Image (cartoon, rainbow, N blue to C red; front, top):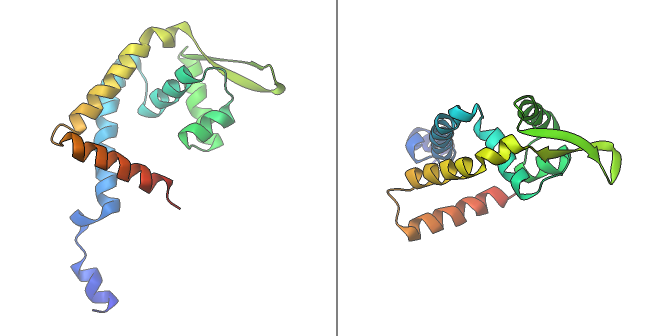
Length: 147
């Protein structure tokens, strides 16, 4: 079959990129809804979750952890700082850069943030068996890490 024939037979609902995009939109909307009480976006919640695990890192390190560019990370951190969830301080090992520290306000909502993340994951995977969920997670990690 030639390329034109393949294009006409292409079924969007069977397209990996389309399905991943729609699943991402669904997960984002669910997360956004549950995070609204904290006035956080899903990206800000992800950044806080990483900071809970490794407080005092710089923006470059945080960007590498959540795979976001400098401009995006800067915006996320600035918004978190403006809301009182993080503060910037002098990096003890490099005075030219600042470190990001989680505040008491953020620690006060830590359990609720983690709970909402678990709820979203449970909702998204409610129709999957444990084996299907494990396979899906392993497959998505493989896709994420491929070149």
